[in-house]
Figure 1 (cartoon, rainbow, N blue to C red):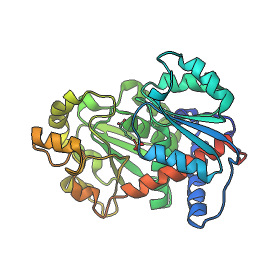
Figure 2: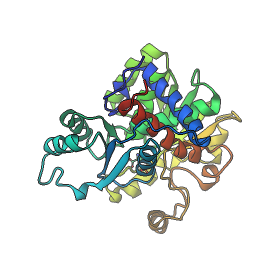
Figure 3: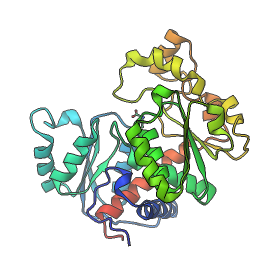
Figure 4: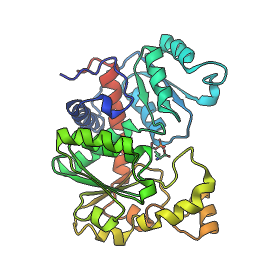
Length: 333
Ligand code: CP
Ligand code: NVA
């Protein structure tokens, strides 16, 4: 059986294919339990700290509700609430928190910081997103695929847009571990880092996943089962970059024309969210006034269209984070 207890969840490449599949299946089971109001207090009496250096809606809400459903107590902190990294090192903070909390979630900039927290705290640490990876998102995403198609076997996911960010890198590597074919369509300057490509190739050689990275959207989406996109500018990037990003990325916008190029009626559309699909946000308004674009990485028509599973995917953040918490901190496996 998979060895989860006491282990941190920092990046998916720390886990085997079997372990990731176990988490995906357990997520589906916990979703069923929640739907049928079957109690699952695997973390009764545990104390969990949630720390956010960057904003979050889904990850924060999902960790909070998941922990409570499991019977744990939760405290949520913004990084500014702590001395963390300003007056006290991450390692020292980690030692203190590790003596008080049974587990720690951390969303931040550097992967090295979440790794240090894990090493120094001695309790399970869960990566709620860094500049490098977004591993809890991956369990929700591949869970959504499995729920939708009944299997991951033989499926192809095509990521379109900024493919040099945390989510694209993680989809490439996690898909390669799981044996899901990953296609990427992005301009050369926004294709995955070579180091990440090499890591993914190593896993793909074992799992049989086919990886294909190109700047040709038409070729990448042909007969794909999933089209996935994410923002063109991730958290932490300079907003002054928007103009050049829009120009670079517009040919990679997920719109009705691009969706038709799959030549498959069953293709689903995914997005980790938040998404710029309309003008209902301050940022979108500003960018519309500056550059005249009504939508960015995905049009409203596709975002709200019948192929979109984005809100099912968002809900699955709850069930999958719950599975990760219970497996690593509870006595489940
Ligand atoms: N997908 C995701 O991580 O969303 P939040 O930034 O709202 O947590
Ligand atoms: N790539 C995005 C993901 C948000 C969930 C970011 O890092 O901002």
